[in-house]
Image: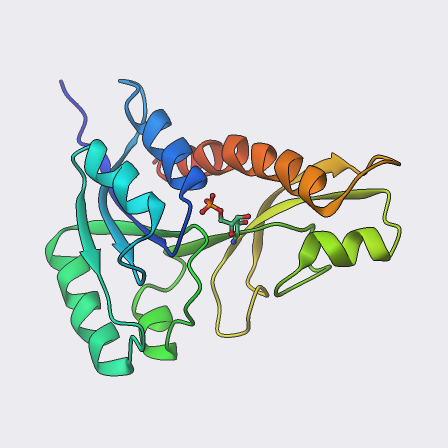
Length: 189
Ligand code: GRF
């Protein structure tokens, strides 16, 4: 019997390396999920090209992405049978309505070991604080930024000669490995 894969929507604003990693894994026969929809608030996001190349349906949302538009999008996602939403470099704040509507169904990846370094410039701040480790965290999305329940973390050692760029590159590699694994687990029933 062929098992139906769980439909996932990925929200992006840019580069899309995490999106690519999620897609790559989804192509495996044994994978439980399918990336069914990619949403971007930037029409020139590189991630959109990745989605299109993989024949995934895409949607551009407005820059303001106001509450009414979020309500409309919630309906569309339900109609498309989307079961989980993965934020992957999505630079917009979701409304309380949207977060409550998809309670415990929206996850995000953040480039630090949360609860440390919420928000932006995480690598710079970790280096300035002379941390021994940085890494990435996957968490449920709640109303407070980068503060929802933590699902998984992956540590990355900070090296003596690290620069923001070098550290970012290694953390991103860890993100690209962790995100598909976590999503696979969450979609296994
Ligand atoms: C990642 O570092 C992610 O943790 C952060 O935004 C970046 C997105 O990268 N939230 P990409 O677009 O997936 O390459």
